[in-house]
Structure formats: structure tokens, C-alpha cells
Length: 106
Ligand code: SF4
Image 1 (cartoon, rainbow, N blue to C red):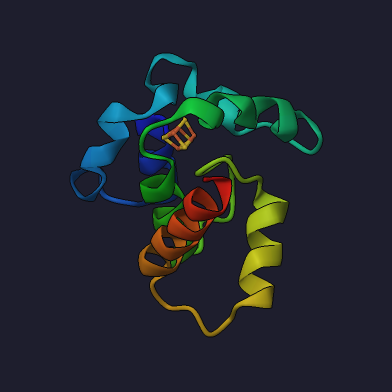
Image 2: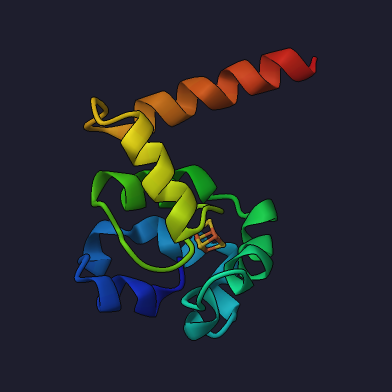
């Protein structure tokens, strides 16, 4: 997530050291906070991001309402949170999912 996004959402930058390695660090932060269908274009930057899981976990754990985080649009995150209201900490679940995906690809 572009650094200024953290500021606009109230999340302390100090807790998001991973953001410095984000693929979006060189893009205009406002480009990640676009409305509607434009979000699907905006999230392309996340496809090769090395901190995608960190970013998505941060957004889900903190119920970030706006912007692209971890390759997901606002609507996609809301849908996921509705389907899994039981999850308090997303990082372990996202890591396990990534491992299953990697194993299935072999
Ligand atoms: S996953 Fe996307 S929004 Fe998050 S740091 Fe990476 S490029 Fe930025």
C-alpha cells in the first residue's frame, strides 16, 4: 500500500514497515483510491507485489474501508469479511491459503 494510504486511513506507518517494499511505492497513492470499476485496473500493480499478503492482512485485520489493499478492491474485501466474520487475525489464514495454492500448482 502506498505510504500515504496508511496516513489517510489512520494506520500508523510505523506498524507498516512492509509498505516500503510494496510494488505501489512508486505510484501515485491516489491511484489506489479510485471509485468503482477503476479499482480493477488499479489493483494490477499488486500482482507482482512481494508484500501482498502483509498488505491484505493489514487491511482485513483493520477493516480498511477504502482503496486497494493486497490486490483486493473495497467490495472484494467487504465480501470476504462478510463470509468469514469469525476471523480476527488474517495473516495465518492467508499464509495457509498461499501454501495450499503453491502445493496445488506443483
Ligand atoms: S499489495 Fe498492492 S496495495 Fe499493497 S503494497 Fe503491494 S502493490 Fe501496494
